[in-house]
Length: 455
Image (cartoon, rainbow, N blue to C red; front, side, top):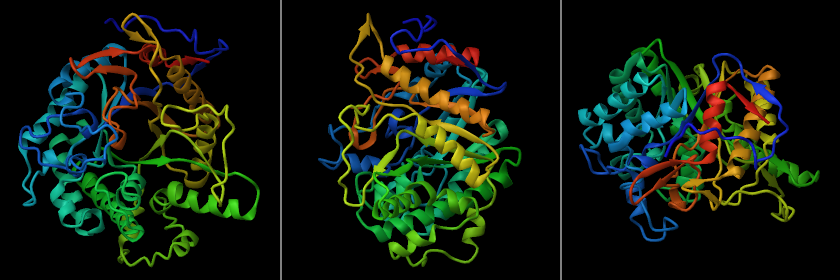
């Protein structure tokens, strides 16, 4: 189906005002390896914690897995061509650690590197900036067998893997991201158990959180030594918390939640250390922190990637109930674009990082309206448009934003939710692997081509 049709705001609400972005602002999309690549046992790839986690009945809502997913491993050329046809400037993808170092002996798998080498070349040939993330949750299973991120040695193994990737891709990549959402890796994987590896220990969560950051610091050193002209970034997810009332209890609980979800990783990277009051509240004894760790972790980054989806309203007794007319997506998350604008201003005021990039922002929607084959997702279009408008406002107030990447390029495997929630601006027919851009993709294509949006 053609992708060069015009997509207006009609049906999604519009005032007709045009917001133009600074020259050099870039537009693109984001994905991750386990969610789209498939080819789980091809060319020497070893098993990851997600292969293992998906094999346990009940862990994934629909009983599915990422064995095939969007088959991007075999279809990357046509996928890049589609991005090019849509006019994207950038593509954020993740590299599958189990493809590069599939076995515990640490040997590098050349065939695994070959895939990402070809992907980078394909992107560059299409005029699309490759933005690889080195870790988007798919830890090799042999490392989990050795205690995963609870084991300090995993951070050093991560640095070795990072160096192998950077030696191959070199300065053809201008920005390497070390980790994606370390909070989710540590909390969902080691505390709540809702993600791989499925553990449920607060103590292990704190250990994992520190070792993830140590891995970031060690990998950043290797990146700078191996590709000194490339930039170093990390991607953190932010869910700003607000108190349900002005009570002391609600405000205290909100502060703790903001510390754990929104400051636990950014503060140490900025040289502020871990939030002390919250560490004390949860009785974390810092035993995992060794001499020199915090200096490694706080070495200046070139870019902070920001993943934003929603905010949270906090009541100490969990009594808060949102009004019935609160707009939500199909996963139940509130839709509140102004929280992104507030977040961007607050992050820059607190940290003064050199540059910021929206690395994920998007929403799952019903996708139940069609015009012929095309999904007419005015709700997703409005979500993306209204959040991009918040980015524009932040730029006007001096926040150095360099681009916006929508999550996600494709409908894909959505972790513990399986294939139910559809975040993509492009529909995927999993039987035929046909890609069909939704109305939101056509709108986003216009935004990318004109470097502007109509609100």
